[in-house]
Image 1 (cartoon, helix red, strand yellow):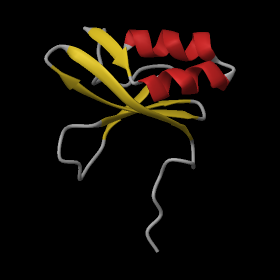
Image 2 (cartoon, one colour):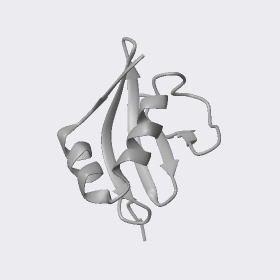
Image 3 (tube, one colour):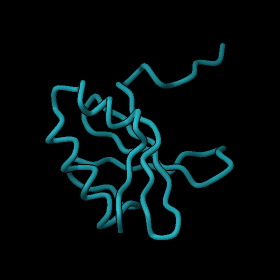
Image 4 (spheres, one colour):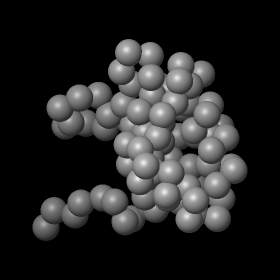
Length: 87
C-alpha cells in the first residue's frame, strides 16, 4: 500500500528532531496498517464516523485511515497535546 501524509504532518516530521525514525515507521504502515508490532502500537479509534487508527511511536501520535489501498496520515501530535479532555 502507498502511504501519503498531510502537509501538516510533513511539517511536524520536519520539526520533530526524529524525522528519519518516524518516516521509517510511517513507511512500514504500507505493509500492514492494522496490526501492532514492535515500535508501532496501532489501535482503532472508537466513536469516529470512519475507521480511524492511531499509531503510537514513543511520544509521537499519528491518526490515519485506509481508503482504496492508500494509507492517509492526516494528523500528528505529541502525547498529551492532541487529546480532548471532557470535564
